[in-house]
Image (cartoon, rainbow, N blue to C red; front, top):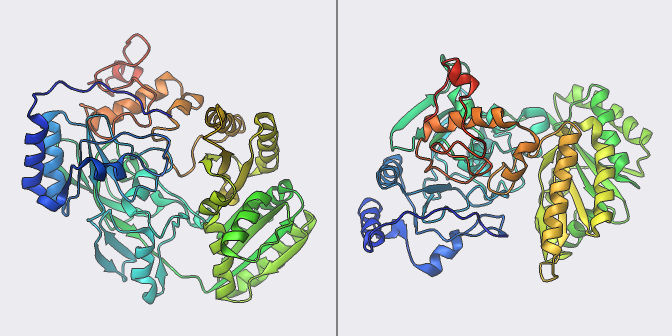
Length: 498
């Protein structure tokens, strides 16, 4: 796959050297990476099919340093891309042509733990799991928990509005972010939101979460933490057919039970995980469904028989309840290692991310199976079944001619099925560079132009993470593919095109 080309600006022969020296004066010699062999480590995120080598990578330690770097870029028209741990799977941190990467990995301090108000204030480079570790001794945790939570960062979670295993009951990142410090594209530092739940004015915090780094760079985050539940019960059930596991998910919620998490894995994933982690999953099963209930002990005890009844109604072959915390952790360890374990059965795989109404799970899983046979490519299914967030893993061999392209097309067809079923092209991985070609499946031109008006209000030069989310060309100074016509919001005096 090739990264989209963009026009490089004409600059004087000594411009790059001068720009690098000015960056070094702000950040120090250890805060700027410019050697070719070191820049390679930043030429892509976890979606490795797209690669662009940046001019520089900078490693600021403070908001002030981020602000100064962005001000320099603004004055010189240099595009830049914010980056956390680089675990994103949609190319959201792909560098821009002739641009720089602003890595926030050294801004990794937890600034405040405020237990009386159930809040944590953290810098963007703090890893997701570190927030829970910081408050665990007080009986609290941070609910959004992506599978990569050991390494992924809070800043990246905010950019992508990340989810995770336990978001079915507790919500995704946007439900847990209350305030932000943001550096605007011209270098101005602003604060939005705060520790309280309701603030006057526009919900700019909600706008910023999930904006994929197109509106500014987040340098401080105020998070809501939640009390650990009194009781947790985890079980898994095995089935001959994955459609039966999908039907169980709908059946459990239809009976009024909302588990903390419900996750499905098919046989291909089960076998891969067992080889890698030895979680105790039955390797002959067509699929397994992991269910976790939490809350007051009396409530969980009352819900367990309901869940077991639904599982048996859907032909569960085996139901196994974790006997203790060690076994519960092992069950989840298997699920959270499903992506890397897939490397044991395929040298290459493409992680797709789409959402469907959970009542359509059985039907859509059947359609994915049909597409897998049509394209003659294996598809592993491991996903957040409770909130309908699918993660089909399309397996291919990049050394075989045409197979990479076939995998990409198959993954796109799966997204088409998601949209046709009333779902979305992304659940938690963002649109990024990879899925902007599918945005028109969900939005018409007026929708896209309206979203672009918001983007232009923050970044009229289009320097902040350019080439992401919106189908190209769509910038603040170009009017897109169609002939320019005044937008209805402009006619009404409610918006302005820059």
